[in-house]
Length: 430
Image 1 (cartoon, rainbow, N blue to C red):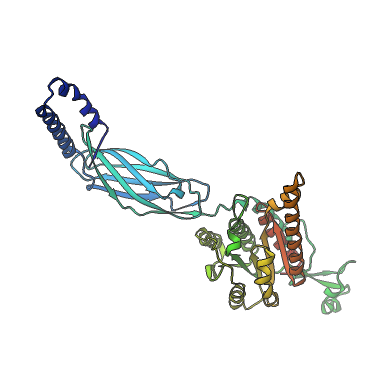
Image 2: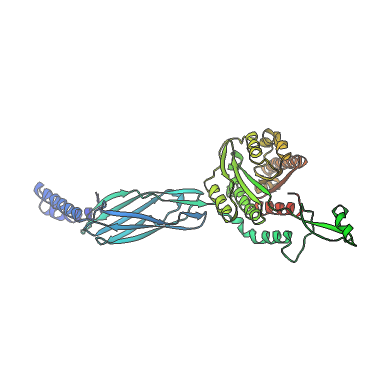
């Protein structure tokens, strides 16, 4: 039970009577009348227990976009249900409006909607629904709660999808499905044609040449149906905020763009998220279901404040991919962490697979390196320049070990990684 604002207002209106006839009897009479009105109003209020509530609506939404969840309220009681319904959600669900007015006749139903705009990835569960039904006098109300489970999953925003049309056009160009033909050494036989000046003599087909009066060469196209494993490092370095979001979020966005392009190219794409154990694993999914599977797996993924087990990561990759594949590792190019971890075992990985390491760089480091305004700025510039030199040395070391390195700001890492994949495919290096 709860009292409304009308109850103290009615009590205040009775004060003049108490002033005119000041006695305990007057005060008691006023209190009894007020109590009687409250009890009558409470008795005539609708029953919270006789309300049947059901949820429906969206179960998933991209981060930054809106969703709607509806609540159907059926009044199975014999009295009209007048009052307020409060739909509670976790704060990161961005729910609103939280309260809805109810005025439902007996045996009838009404529907209210709550709009959601999540501020974090992952599952955003609904909390309890609290209903407060007022009596006809508006003095008192019955209050109760209903537990109606519902969860809305906030998916990665995939902001880099704006780059998808241009990269797919590049892919069609590479595959020869447009009028523009790209010459490159592939690994899959395409066709035979006459030799022209500039062709590689190693591509001459001598048997076909013997059967013809002209020299015949083989033409190649970039290989299709390759295996691509995208690996996300979810250790402590991925938790660092770069710009407005953690480094892991930019890595996820890059992985989604690469997945969409590689799947369209006919490659088989797998996902592995790892820190000290496997945090996400998507395998054996192709076609239209591939990208949704990746998005759902990434939605609930968070960075862990632990050091990544580099040996365990490499061991897991090698165990899962026996045949040579393209391994795209999205991690941070942190010299100290790399020298104590991945650099010790990277040779085992490059000997079996083609490896790309993609890293989200912090644009703030470049800004600090350009500061010269005062003594603090000079020290900051010296520190940032030193970090850039260490990172450049680490990149050169990885390249010498046979690793392709892609490093870019959060907004540029996705198209940069996609371009590197397309370039390697066009050159027949996958």
